[in-house]
Image (cartoon, rainbow, N blue to C red):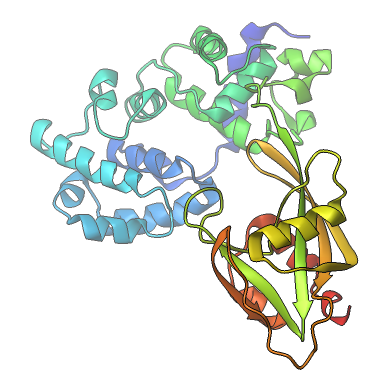
Length: 366
């Protein structure tokens, strides 16, 4: 295994022949570099290029951007999302125009003081546009250096990120920050990917401690996730006279104003089929019976793992020709009896949408 001192020379040699031909790399104009970095936040690079080219054609320099109305800037940004980035870009352009004579500042602290710019973006612009010897550590760089140097602390927590920053600075070759920072990001985006990293094609594989130890998949160490709470839930598709009963959730709480099939948590010691009959009675005052078990749907949310027991229900004793009954709603604001084909026109929580998708070709013949 080669010494980590070889890391930067190997990385820079690789970048010299593998750097993507991105438009802001033509002359590293500070305005172009800045716009590209703001666009690349929360956006895949393959989408950034087209938006960048159109944006630069519409606002070719800081003066043009600073003079533009906000509506025009937002329109040019349309489709990129996270519109606060566009608003901050406009606000920063106006500050640069008013306080820096229209020339983008080269100093890290001056860049960092502009709206919408954090440590990473300030470091990226200072180094890429102006050649300043400062690091720029984004998610790609965190991942690459955590693997190369076997950093075993969660890299998104303060202590772990501080270790990565220290390593990034120690490996930075003076006077080469522009290429070094871009090469690190490029390596993380193209080779040292989060999943399925291409270690065979990696130019720094021989100095990578994680590869040497066989723990590439274990680096970087991620922040400990919050405890996941398992939930057992029953839901019922009440199918009567060719129609299905759905109800609209109350505005407050999880999935407010979405439509659903009634149901709720299965109590300790309760069987799922008994739970759905009970829940239906509590939420609608309908006395139902289970006609069939439809499916078991599993779906994960941020802090919950839901196991959804799904049943087909009927109204016992209800004549097919009789009018469909009205519910007494206790957990919803509205209800409807709808045709099966109409379900696609309503917004459902993900677990219920999975049920609809899974049973679309078979449910309505039961």
